[in-house]
Length: 290
Image (cartoon, rainbow, N blue to C red; front, side):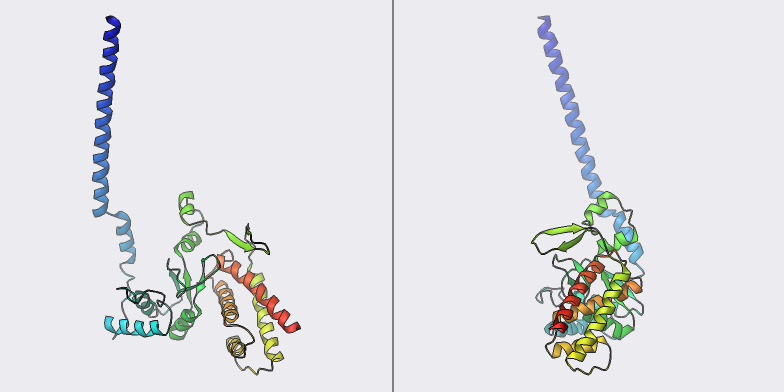
């Protein structure tokens, strides 16, 4: 009998502990629910962002209405003039990219545009769909209108450029931006360590200039002006492809951005420029030797 009473007492004690733990669990859920509700109304992160951005909102150009901008965006869309023509024209905010761009064009200063938009009407991309550099058309339009330089950078590259000591959790979220890829003759993709240098890219760029001049001489093309006119003439005469021209122009731009301090030598685009520049040199040299 005594043994049965002890067992019953233990069971009652366990039931009391169970009820107590269950109540504590439910009270915790209620507290968590109230906390989450509060976040919808008191977002400290959003408040901080608004405080930073409050004085940096750019409005449409003087004399232009929203209707004017929408009409201009439609014309650019028809002619595939970046940015924005990759957006669905049926969407309500399809002209949003151009409206942003029209605001950027008002800035009388060098601009580094931090954006997660990776569509090809904003940036050139590598084979892994990673953004490399802003579209040539955007760089040229901005320079013509302002006389300044324009560069595009993703948020992950921007954050890690400012602070290389970010936490491991943040690094994971930034998708290991410093990983470099190199494709060998095999089908395998090999991760390599950064081997970029400004001196190396500078030599490659100068060599490309020399080879473009040699190409023009070989084809008896009389070019008066800069390398861009020479490249356009080579494309017009079917000596090089449009893709090769765009690659060379991008390499030149990346090299200049390093000189201006807009890019660091460990930036992914620099590795791309060195790799692609070497490839261009080999192809042009082979063509000249034939």
